[in-house]
Image (cartoon, rainbow, N blue to C red; front, side):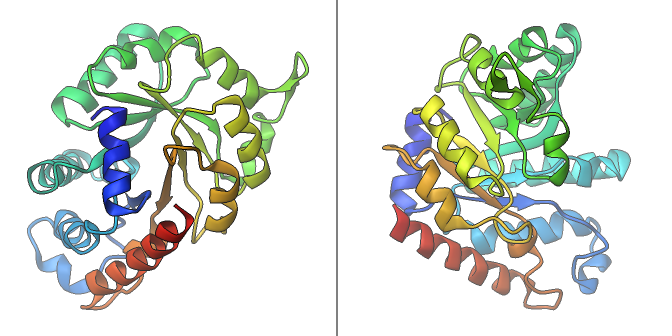
Length: 269
């Protein structure tokens, strides 16, 4: 999916919602445990219930890899289901990969060719040769970790070097690797004022913003500091949507929460 197609979906749905599929088998409704693949059964119901309100889905691969080959199969089935039934959706593999060149090249093939994700989150710590292999795929995106929403982000990301915090140096350096047609950035919703600074540095780039909802991020503040002329935001909510209910009505409640966020986004747009 290219940038123009993504922007078109945002305008059509009046939404910049990304639903995080962080599916924990310990938290899904008990009746689904009878299914051959409970994780996929849960995801399928959540996707069907929320697709009209969202423009993207973001499975966090850790929640699938923990179950070995069976979990990987659930992930593959989930992405295939989205691609077959909602081909307009932007699918992000939240894998946070990044390694020496030949290893990154195989990670890229795994997620872009085998799993057919549209984007992958990438850690920039090892530098350009760990990121470049992900950039050589037509219509695919790198979402570079810039300023994350967790408390420990201050351990390293705010360290000052050459007059700039480390996360700002990551942003500035990455401009040499790709433009806003191939690269997005992860910026946590728990850093709204920094989000404004990042938007000034990267006026045309899309920002993937986790942390709205269960982690305490505020959608209004994110929009105030992060919106650009093309929207330029994908705001992720995971637990607040997918675990809105643990009962038989889990999909209905997920739809209600997604609808609430979409309505707010429509007003902000």
